[in-house]
Length: 274
Ligand SMILES: [Zn+2]
Image (cartoon, rainbow, N blue to C red; front, side, top):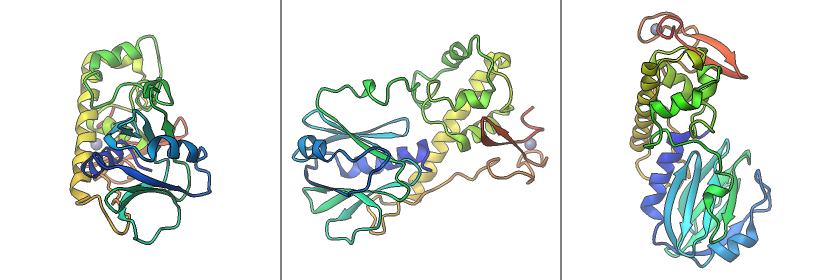
């Protein structure tokens, strides 16, 4: 499943190719994604307009047009985006193709169809849509130890569940939550009421460090976004805890433990993360 760093790398790839291009056609398949593909809105608001910017919010991609409309994309579990020559053979599960004015096509492929495509008409504020209520970006200025301390005040949830709550912070999934807490040396089950000021500082620093490292790793894995095969090269950090139960901790050699928390597999070093 694409996580925040993957979506960020895809955004940076699209930024090199899309702004300044005009969408001159749109072809949508018949299958429904998580929501039906808004063919009419694509024709009304995206077709004929020029792409101005590509942004990311949490795990959503926002492609802004010069007429004020925004194409909102979510990759779900298996979604992929690629830029192809218009005459490149279509792949199974290509659900949307946008014809650009340079003989290239932006294609959205999604085998499991948990992703979705939405068109926000001009004048619709993206923050008042599905993005409403999402917490600050973990790499943004608003994400500070003080902010987290405020958010946690009066609550008593386990630390990992708190970090995975998108109202608290945007886009931290299960894998990265485990890796961040290992890096910070904090137990995922620790109650947030018992997390100290210093711990919150470590958490913010570890979030930034782990996510930035993953983005960098993606940037080097994916040399060119335009790919005839459509593979944007899913990448992964060398994981220290996730999926490594029973294997020695890279720091102290204690076997990595696995526990289920809020229905999600959770990995940690019982020694380094007391
Ligand atoms: Zn350890």
